[in-house]
Amino acid sequence: MRRILLADADAFFVAVARAVDPDGAGRAPLLIVGGSRDSRGVVCCASYETRQFGVRSAMPISRALRLCPDAVCVPVPFKACGRKSAEIRTVLLQFAPIVEGASIDEWYLDLTGTEGLYHHEALATTAQRIRAAVLEASRITLSIGGGTNKLIAKMAAARAKPDGVVIVDPGGEESFLRSCTLAEIPLVGPKFQERLATHGLVMIEDVLRYDVATLQRWMSKREAAWLWNRVHGIEDSVVAHREVARGLSREETFGKDLHEDRDLERELLRLVTRAAADLRAAGLSTRTVAVRLRDWDFRTHSARRTLAEPVVSDRVILGVARELLAALRKARRVPARLVGVRLSGLAPAQSATQFGLFPTAETERDRGLAGAIDRVRGKYGPKSIVPGTLQRMDSP
DNA sequence: TCTGGGGTCCTAGGACCC
DNA sequence: TCTGGGGTCCTAGGACCC
Image (tube, rainbow, N blue to C red; front, side, top):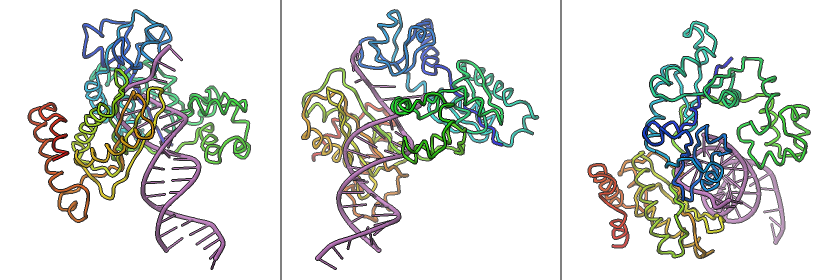
C-alpha cells in the first residue's frame, strides 16, 4: 500500500510577496499579486481576504480591482519565489527520499515503506510534523493531502486548504470520491465539464453509475478509460524526480499593441536572447524553435521548425525565429499584443567535438561566441552585453 | 470582463519509410 | 497498375495547470 502526500503552499505568491516586502505588501490584508494597477495583467495569486470579494487567480487585474477597489497590487516576485520554493524542497527532503516538484508551490512525497522509520504514527501526524518543520524553517504554511496514490493525495490537499491536513485512509477512497464533483478531478477543466454536463454528469457519483462501454458512447475510448479510472480512484503514476524539462519559453504581452514588424522583431530579439542564455545556463541544446504571435483580437498563431541538429547559439536560434515570425506576419499583418519564443526538443548540450561530427547550421564560432557572452554576463551582469550587440553580430 | 507567464500533454493530418 | 498496414517524425492548435 503506497503512502503518498501532496504538500501545497497556501497562497504561495502572496506569502512570498509579504516576506520580501514586510512594510508594504506585508501590511496589506487586501493584497493582489500579479501586476500594477493599470497593467494588462491577470491575478497570479490573491490573499484570502481579497478572495472574500470574489477575486480569483487568472482574473484580469482590472476586474479584480472593480470587485475589491482597496486592494494593493504588487508584481510577482519571481526570483524570491524560486528561492523559497527550493528552500521548502530542502526541508521536505528530510522527510521523504523522493520529492517530486509538481509546480513551484507543490510537491509529492512518497512515504511508502517508512512506517517503521516513523514508529507507525498516523500519516496525518507525519503530515503535521512536516507542516511544522516548513513553517519553522521557511515561514510558509502548507496544506497537505494524503492517500494511496497521487490523485487522491492531490484531491485531498484541495480539501485541506488552507492550513490543514486531510488524509484519505486506504479503503476510504470511494466514499471520499463520492463527495466530490467531477470538476475537482485534476485535468477536468471547463470544456470537459461542459461536455460531461450534457449527459447529466456533474458529480463523481453520477459517473459511477456507468460502465466504460457506456462512457465510450459519449467520449473517446481513451477519455472514457481515463475518466473511469479517475472516478474509481485508480491512478498508478509514480512519485519521481523530474527529468529534463520538455521545453523552455519566454513571451511578452506588450503594454500597447505593436503595429510594426520592426518593433516585433526587436521584442523577438530580446526574448530569444533571454531564452538562449537560459538554455545554455541549464546545459541544454534545442532542436525545435517556435514563435507565437497573439494579435490584438486574441487570435493566436504559432509556427515552428525542427532543425537537423541541436543548437545553442543566439545567432542560429534568432535566424530561425525571425523567419518564423516573418511567415506569421505575412499570413496576418495586424496589431499584435504578444510575441513569444519556445525552445523544445531539449537535450543535454554535447561537447564541441561531438557537435563537429555533423554538418550543422551552427558553427564552432557561434558556440564559442555564445559561451563568451555568457561568461561576460556572468561576471559583469546580465545587462553588460545587450541584444543590440547581437544584432550586429547577426549581420556581419 | 477583456484576458500573464511559465509549463505539460494530446490530437489530427501529412510526409515518409518499410 | 493499384494497393495494405504500421511506425515515426513533424506541424498547428487546443485543453489544462499553477
